[in-house]
Image 1 (spheres, rainbow, N blue to C red):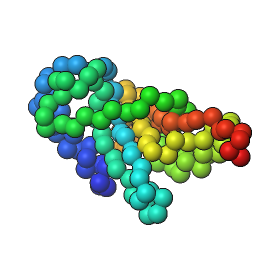
Image 2: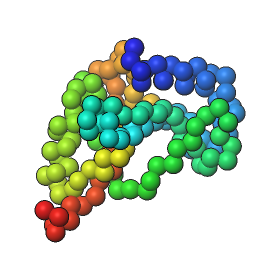
Image 3: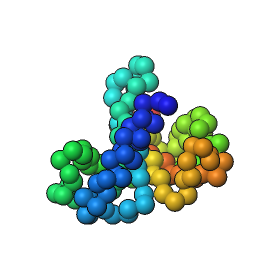
Amino acid sequence: NNEIGRVWVRFFDYLKDKMTAIPNLVTPDALYELHIYGEEMLTIGYFEAFVGIEVENLDSVPLDLLGKLIPVSQYAVFTLEGEQIVADWHLTVDKWIADAGYQRDERFSFQYYDHRFKGLDRIDESILDVYLPIATIDQDDE
């Protein structure tokens, strides 16, 4: 019942009627939730959220959908299971990234949902992957 949940509902409603209108799907049973962070994230915690599917190219994306290109990056991938999905996992993840000698590219992140995600109503049975873009910490910057 939050804004991101309402975006998912609208997207699923759209897909019911239009899935065949998107011919160049990479993985039809995989979904993504993209978070784009701006200055509002640092000051008040706001970010932009988009939900979608991966396509081979943007040429045949219907006009009523938005296409986003994600920068090529090195990612730390974290698999979350059950209650971890709804817990405050950021603290553990951020500590691991720092301890491993990386820093986050804090412009965006995304979540990957496939057949392992059973839904929020079955969170104990669900699994998803979180992709966080990272870079090696330059020792000269420390």
